[in-house]
Every structure is written in structure tokens, then in C-alpha cells.
Length: 465
RNA sequence: GCUUCCUUAGCUCAGUCGGUUAGAGCAUCUGACUGUUAAUCAGGGGGUCCUAGGUUCAAGUCCUAGAGGGAGCGCCA
Image (tube, rainbow, N blue to C red; front, top):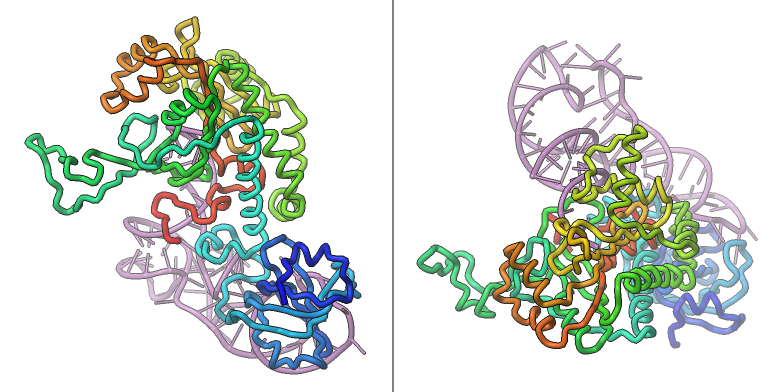
């Protein structure tokens, strides 16, 4: 008989009809007359109840049906006599696909910490929490593709392996086929990469932005969505060595247009979650973060604050005058630290903030310089709890200005001639931003640690699964 | 990388001022129960107290070093 997925079985109205479901046993309980099996197949956070009449099935037959075992169940779909569900399956035929020794199966019915589950990342998708998180993760990916597709963007694939060493801040993972125990060096003691796979030093990308700009200079509106790698020794609940990033790049827009897109896009994603992940969000709201759904609604119902950096500094200095203590100073020209961002977002405004027009020296070389000569047109979106969720900017489109900035910063651009060609041939005003996919998921799921919103987290000293 | 906290049963944790045989809940096993909802009730089994040194008559508890993990910060998305 053909398998019905549980999300459909629970909605079925074909009472009295035979049905076949497959899944993993969450629990079995009962008495000497009847046994109840809670079965989950991942299609929904909800389980379907299988009822085994012990006059038809012996305890011996049901013995392998333990928490974690995988079974197929055939029976009649009937209205439930119990209170917890509307339909259930009266078991007529049982197939055991895979047993799970209850003495050794690590997933308990309750009381599992996130830290412990990280040590069994190969099994944690079978828990309610991670099932919900990963279904939401999929939905957010679909929301992102749908948003951009509907708004006329093209999905542009930028390379994961790159030979340019100035993509942006960030240590890179080197990619090589060389024998690391016997490296060929030149006369100056430098490693000779001429016989390496690419004939030059190569690394995993830290950003697709520079190549994304090339796409925008031809297709008008593009976005990238792929993995990104940072070899930094960051030990925080907000950093991964391997994470996914979304980077739209749009020609012929200015700073205000960019902020409109950032805000519209992120609200679209949050709204998508509320519209499409109701059951999972309700679960997370109940067990992980009691204020989750309310917070999601508050974000889509409010206008983000648009705050120039200089005004932000004024607010922070005013707070200091009124007695607020910060660990770090906040003078004009300093990069804001987490405590400053959190004060603005969580205490002063109480809503997301798009901070703009940063001092040029604390931002990347490619950002468009304002007429004051001191600030650049960055537009970072700061969220409560998680800090910077989007880093965006208008790009410097003028060849001479961009080149002067590169010289001033002494950035090695010898391998970047192709990037400068965008400004050399048919340059256009353009802007874009980068959104950390897992940081969006932190916000949407209410999870506390970024390692718990990606199936197999990669962090310093951790790449087991 | 810096600061700080944690590591006791399969899991979550308690363990007082250093003092007899290290406890609880859940899980598991056995039994009971006529429909359960993280089922309930009764009983049983289960310990390298992270590792290595040290102090002490005596160490889960104090000291030193190491390992692993969390949090805060830095860097960033």
C-alpha cells in the first residue's frame, strides 16, 4: 500500500479507510489491553497515534517498537476516542524497518540540553526542537528565493574557491593540493604556488559580493545564496566557520532604496515564517522562547529606525552623561561594540535599527564616500538580541575615487583587475547587502546559539559530523 | 585570542563547614492498570564524582596543571 505522509494523514477525512504510514517511534505507552504508539515522520512536528489492540498483537510482536525505532504501520484511519488528537490509526499490519536498542538510544523523551544534543548532531534532527528548526530553515530558504524571484532578481552563482586575498575582512581557509609536509619555497623563503592546483594561492570565499557586483553590472538585480567560510577563531553564539549568506546586489539604486529593500526583504521572510511554519513556531514559542511569536509580529508591524551613525553616537554619549555605564568608550570614529548596539536597539528604540553613514575608516574600501568626505554610505541592520543581521552599503562606482581609496589603504589589488573593470567599463551606481542566513534563523526560531540552527555546525575545534 | 563559569548515574541536576555506605527526577528493566497524551503506580539494576598530580588522619568537596563544554568580550554575517 502507498505511504501517506503524516502531515496529510492528520488532515485526512477518509475515516474508516485503510492507510499506511511510516516513521520513527517517539513513544509507546499503554496497558494490557491496548498500546499507543506516537509516530513521527518529519513531515510535521505533530505525531500520529497508532493504536495496537493487544488481542490482535502480542507484546512479543510489539517489543521492537521502542522509542527511536523505525516502523511502517498499516490500519484503518478512525476518529480518535482519546482527547489529544482527532484521528488515529487502528493497527492491522506492522513492519519494523529498524530497531533502536532502548538501553543505548541516546534520545530521551525529555530533559536534553542543547549542549548534549550538539554532541549527537547526527541524531538531533529527530527531536521536536531540531525538526522544527530545520523545517523553518528550509522555509526561510524558500522565502528568500521566492522574494527575489518575484522581485525580478536573478540567482547568481559566485565561486566558493577564490584566488583573491582582499575580498574583505576575515581569515581565509586555504585550498591546496600541495604536500604540506614538503613545501617548495622560492629564494626568499616564500611558498611557491606555481605547481599548486590553481597555479596560485587559493582559498575558500569569505564573501560573494565582489563577484556579485559583476553580475549586477549585467543582469541588473542579482542575489547570491551559498556557503561562506571564515577561519577566524570566533567563540560566540553568533559565529560559525561555515555559514550561509545571502547577498543581493542591485544596479541603479541609492541608499534610501537599499534600506527599503533591506527592510522589505526581512519583513517578507518573517511574515513567511508566520504564514507557513505555524505549528513549528508554536512549539518553539512554548518550549524555547515564550516571546517568540509576539516578537516576530512586532518586527513586521513596525517601521525600522533609520539612524545615521553620528546621531547614534550622540544618543550614546547622552546616555553616558545621564549615568549609563558602558565598558568601552564611544567617541565619533570608534566602531560600535555589542553593548552600544544593544543599548540603541533594545533600550533606546526598542525596535530594529538601520544604522547609516559610518566613518569611512571603520568600513570597507568599496563603500561610497559621502560629500562630507568623512563618512560612507553603509546601511547595517541591527536586531535585538543578535546584533548585526545585515551589513549593506552603496558601492563606490567612480573609478578614480575607488582607486584612490585602494591606494590610501594600500590594499593589494594586483589580482583584482577584473573588479576594477566594473568601474572602468560602463560603471553604474549600485548597492547591496549581506544577510547572515543563520542569524536570520536565530531571530525567527528564538534559538540562543547559532550552532543550533544549522544541521552540522563548524566552529573552532569542531567538525565532527 | 582575552575574561569567566561549568564537568557527579543513560539524561537533567542536588550534594551544607573536608567526615560513615554519594542522592533525586526522568530514562531503562520487572510487575500492576479497560483509551493513554512527556500516561500513572510499585519495585529492581545502574557511579573511573572529566584526567593527572598535590595538601590532609580523611577529598565529589581544597590547591596546581591539563582536557572538554558554556557564557561575556573582540572580530564579523
